[in-house]
Length: 131
Image (cartoon, rainbow, N blue to C red):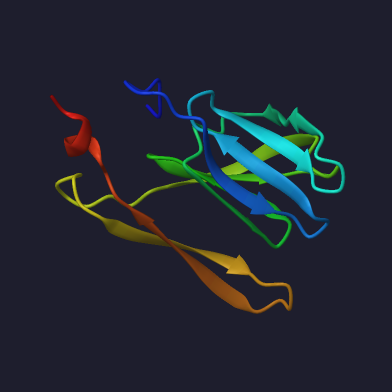
């Protein structure tokens, strides 16, 4: 599971859409916040489906990728991120011992229709928080 955590987390990821809307993840609450960069007004994004507790965000080709400890959730929106729908998820390819960094890839099409890849590095920091 992604949470709850034995320590408090707040904002833990930020990205910007092509319209200049900021999207911020709140890891502790498991929410996404939409911020209108022109006036600073914010609101929670209403999400249909499970999107985990985001540790990082990436916005590319009209989709939002919410990176968690266990998966990458793919979200789409047709109203400038007031509402979003989870359209898929990608399991993070963890190392055999589950304690070291690893990299997973998944395909995307860029704005020009050429295939590209996104590399996500996953690092577990559990040892830092053990007593």
